[in-house]
Image 1 (tube, rainbow, N blue to C red):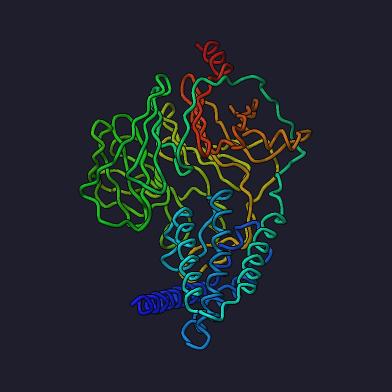
Image 2: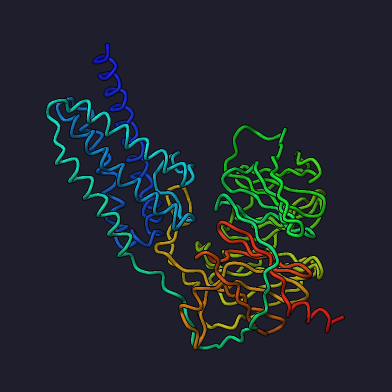
Length: 489
């Protein structure tokens, strides 16, 4: 009986691995351009992207062939265990150090987040290793197993520790003016996961959404330091979404949706239950709430294949397109950026990630304006190609010049990635840098790293800067802002 169970276990594991490798291998070969582009986003694999794009699926299909031939099955199981061990080590390193990179597994496995991938790969490694142990019987060759395992681990670690260090963008054409000791920490909250994002800030409440579990949220009161875990209810929603929905808070309402299906729901923060409420929801890649039934979206124009901004309302015409974003034909990355709405001035701003300027519009996009940033460097010449499914892909990693913008008291606050003249690289890397603009550049602020983590986004209200780190959120009182408010009043 035990022998029969062992044989069935080996057979089931063998077929599972064969199907897995055939599926992922064929998926990668069919979407070669996408797979290569995803590999190229990883610093440790980018130099070998063109080779690995062919090598990985070929190895997977070869292993599938070995698994399906009874005389070579034991070697297929051994190779599967070693390959999956290498994948496991790689996923752990990516999950720990670069969680924002795209998955390059192929097929539906891309829907997994990095943590799920880690556990899936680890379980598959153990299955393959156990099946090899049983199937090899008296012909166990531990030397081959140990040598192969050590070799694959060593190769992955070698690629990781010898990868090119991320270079800091530098422009010697400008010099920053830092306001020293401008921030004073007032409160902090540790986060259990690095997948939280700020969904809104109202008074002393910080609303945090979770990009891997979209119905879970956290509300933190930074005055009392109390936290409340919330569960969003969407009774009208389908069982599955085409992409993970994200939510945001504006006033007494919260809004949740995603632009691929597309869908949009609204509910009150008093009960966290949201329902459909808008007609003819358009496709979108970014959305900003103006009021309870009016939004600005960024979308891909069907006929021109360019990014456009659009006003979306609950009255006809529901969508009014504004073709105002600068980009060349077929190069969406040139128009990639961060959309922001200034509620005080009723104006829209768009920070181009790869251009050194902010575009501004008032009066329903009829009156354009522009704020030039202090650096002259421009990274908008992004080389791209189009995947088999029409997806626009970068040919190599390109660093964005900046990543976030907030407007407050007629000033623009830009989270910059560009180092100026005379700045120490270690000091620059040890802080997140915010450049402040009125009509022109005025000064810069440093948000210090915490426990080796750099702030990845921020919010501003009348008294505080709220900085989100991967595993914590910190509230700083901004003394200079308070002084500026007093002077203006």
